[in-house]
Image (tube, rainbow, N blue to C red):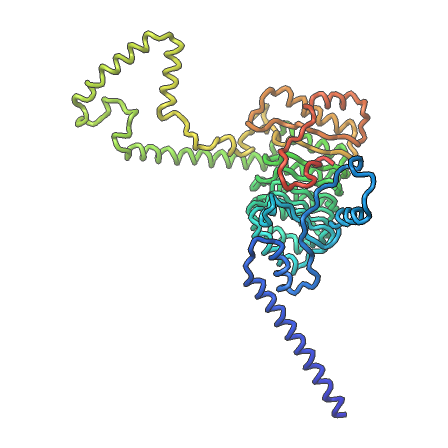
Length: 486
């Protein structure tokens, strides 16, 4: 009996000791990851940090294989070893590995990272939080089916925020039970290209995404292209995104292909692209902005006059001679009379056109000439300040910044097509955009909808649109971004 009674405490003690040893090992691993200084070589930093974190199976870091040449250019017969090597390279992306693209042969010049088909958990995300910011040239991160949860997604966004040159994020095939993708599109986000294809995004997530695009108090100013294709966005979700486009002036390309959008959603999207009346909340916010602008001008005027008073007399070149202090009057003004009279005589002999041009140049050379360092105020103008009163309502010209809209493979009929046709005809009537850089739609994709190809409205729409072109400049490190419409 004593032996059995003694075994129980011994087993408990052994279990406690094993648990303490495991905890001490985890603490050492955490301390090791904290003490390790990344060198910027992903092939060296990633395995070392995984070993210090206690990760058993460490994915390999490999170069992304270049695309294979077309089949008609391949040799007729290849050795079996070469065929097997090509098959292995073709499907290597589905093995647990990290594929990289480089600017050149330097291993520190990684510009894009691809992770496909293996789950990223908390420990692995902690390793990536140290590896990725150490890559000075990292521009794009592509994640496909990595098993992120709504709890880890904000942590991933925090990691990417520490990558100074990162502008492209592709997070596809990663549905979440709770909407959280909007955390990647905050007002402080630096992402320019975001792809969220095939993530089962519904109307609830679309509402948060629309709020991230713009609200009365905030607006995303960095995002240039957004891909939301192959999701579950209906007319309700399209309305939420259209609401986000009301005051957003940075997004140039939007893809909503392969969703469940019908005529109601298409009409909501078309309405924000043309002139529309402001809501009560937008009118109140516009009055507040006008008041702030007026108070700013009122406060600046006394300051400028005070600076002019304190300015030395040698800098007051625009002051008249009779307003100078009495001590300054002497022989100096009389010496300048002869050159002035000669200049006036020469100007009187010139034609009237040249005299007027000379007078304009003289004005611009003085204090009225704008400084090249001063930013264009039109670029900093809030969209609500573009609104004007018309027939008792306050009308906003509409979103003319969006250049590309993809709505292929939805449920739009000729009724929704008519809404876009009216917008494009209105843009054609305006020869020049009211704001620089806002040209309006250049590409509108409505194929594979419930619209007959021989529809007169569809033919008219194709006539109004310019020839097909890519509205966004292609950047290195973007994989599949040229398919913004597929």
